[in-house]
Image 1 (cartoon, one colour):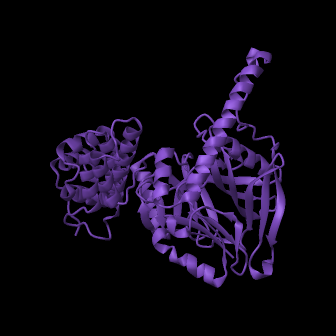
Image 2: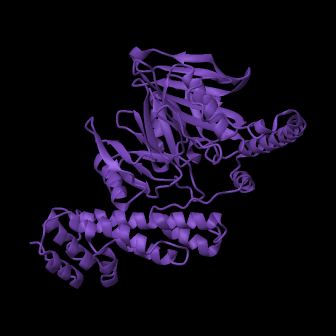
Image 3: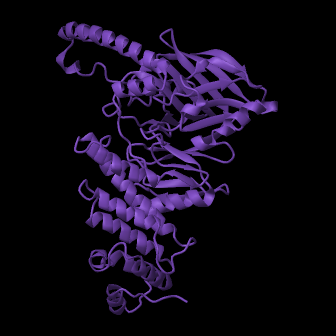
Length: 494
């Protein structure tokens, strides 16, 4: 039996519109007036009014999502109400009222995650602006409350703090590399400053300021200082693998390696720390080709950004500055979603695509993305999208100028439609934007379509190893940490 709407506000609404069955009712609904009369966490009223719209329009969840969006518009999250907003988010995660059960609880859960995600982003911004210290007692309590609800807050760590942390963990390789890197960069920087001071005298004023700008906008050019030299190949496709290893050089100097893996011979997988034991199983079978840290990890040892493994939410926070959603498909393929686009196209699990609005823009769209993940047992993580659909996206003015070891995942296709997954491992320190531009141009010089280039974590989670068919590890291509020291791994198997 369907219960009629009981809140006084909704009864007045029913009388005014006389039961009209028109979805425009939700557009013109007085949400502010409703929220002034009905507490946002009055789940008894929300559930009854949700059922009213279900009976009237065939969908009551839309009412809840619209109400949630309007609530956050009229009562935005700020530092002063952060604790109260966490209370509200937690109440939605465990919403209790007559008529709410495990089968219809999902909209309330999505609303809870969305509110808590807003709190996380508010705290991150306040920490960056030095309005709160999330490593101190008061801020730390808020962070821990969010973490208990699968919401992890990103707190930037200084280079000194990273070195101290790695010293405590016994990761001496990381400490030595960073120390040497800083010494070299400081020396180079002093030389460059001196050189440019002398050079500027002889350069026309209108050209000064152009020097040093990375070649990021020149998508039509294929010029690059980088080249590839063959290193090794495993190309017995009849046995299910096709892989080529290349040395990467720049102006004759070796700077790293590239592992080119053919699809569908090589298959991708993504695992979270609790399932890293699957790594040993792949190794035992002699089927493991490559393992590397995928998404970034925060200070609280949780994957950063929206992360889902086989439909299970690991981190529900959708970051606004990580535009790449890396979807690892059940068949071992990878599909990259650009979160800058107004509409996302998601694999429906049956060979087709379903359209979803951008989840950064509304609670409704966020809930659609999360419902899709649950229904299809999707696996994905969020990271920085450097290039997409044959276009460079990285903004050199916003990208970090810090020189560091880099690792990229590139997805490319040739003119026949053959797809390859490529891991670029560049131990030589580079700034992010210039290196991205070089690798992009290198791929274009091979007449390849660049489907996507994504940044992978090489900081405190620097895990990488490559195996031959049969299991022998290739020591030349490796990170600085063992696999158990990371929170997540992107695996490629034969």
